[in-house]
Image (cartoon, rainbow, N blue to C red; front, side, top):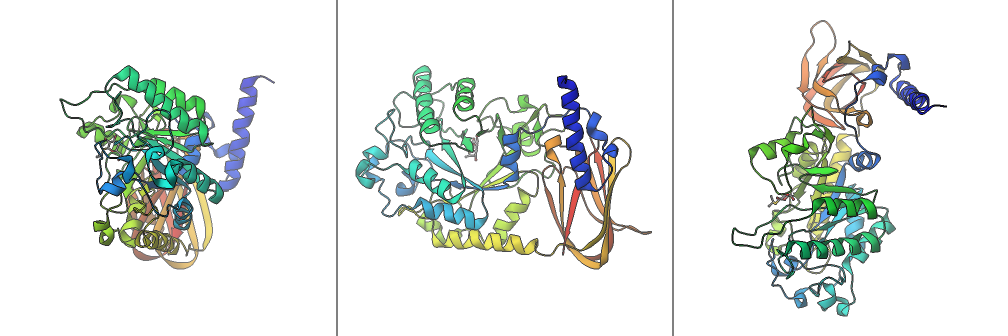
Length: 456
Ligand code: IPT
């Protein structure tokens, strides 16, 4: 059988399966011949469908009360009395997170694993008498609890003497990444921070990103790579936890010319993406549960409230992004009780919001020409509606550019409207008693069914 015939039959089989899911004859699915648009790899799709991950900032800054160490810290200060990575990971699970990212090396250059590239690591610390490995304990805990591990390795290194001697430091950085990417099993995400505070008279390092990304692709082919410029996942453009209301997973790569680029146009591109973007690069919304990224006892009374954490879920996951929520371990090496309680509360509050799906009598979709569609939902009885949960089948790309939800009937009442949908669009509305609903979407090219779930 020729490849093209086999490809067509595969497409047809997939279409039939989706048609059955949507309760419509497959031949009505117009996107079989739809113009091709960027779409996620299997790894990007799985990464986004996880929706929520925990970030763990831990290192010498935990012991100096700083946010950016300057590389002069002594390894002797690193000595968490009761480090418990199992507690970190169990907390992540209790919060509903599916993956985690640990800062294996932050800007101060202190390595949380024994490395051959520098003595500025746990091997020179009193912790576990210099025989400890935080990265090992973290990935082992993740695997025991079924949570996907990711690692952050700061390109900026304020301790290593080679930093600024670009060729030499790039070799050092490749060696550090090689240790992290080969010793600790499969990784879900590799995180490249673009932060760099070197002033004009500071050390100027020219990184080799093609070499770096090729190394990760080779050693960890199933990991997604984060940075402002991807290649797989982009930054959202702020640390407040707020994705743009219009939010495309596609982007024009030239709009973010390099990692660490700033300026209104770059931030707008990160915040919103582009409908005509040539690459699929979904966003990660990173934000901390506390004012800082590292633990500071002075911030124990400033941990975000449950309602604030739920709102972050709506402004990230609810806007077609992924939430990476940072929770910093204390100097003892455990997550603070207050943080744990707020994370557990966030999950309970989220689950309560989605606990009462409305009971439907009818739920049908129809394409209205090549670039519009309508979903009509009839309820079994009039019910109170306060939460809309919309979603595109992003495995086929993202297409919706405008949507609106109204009551059905002779005098439709607009309940909510927006622009993009993507993986997920969450919208809270004032409680309204409804009997039937219509969702109308307009797309940038071919139309595909859009899911709509209704909650009390
Ligand atoms: C900022 C970096 O410049 C950016 O590249 C990205 O890594 C981001 O952090 C992640 O939050 S630096 C921050 C002080 C805005």
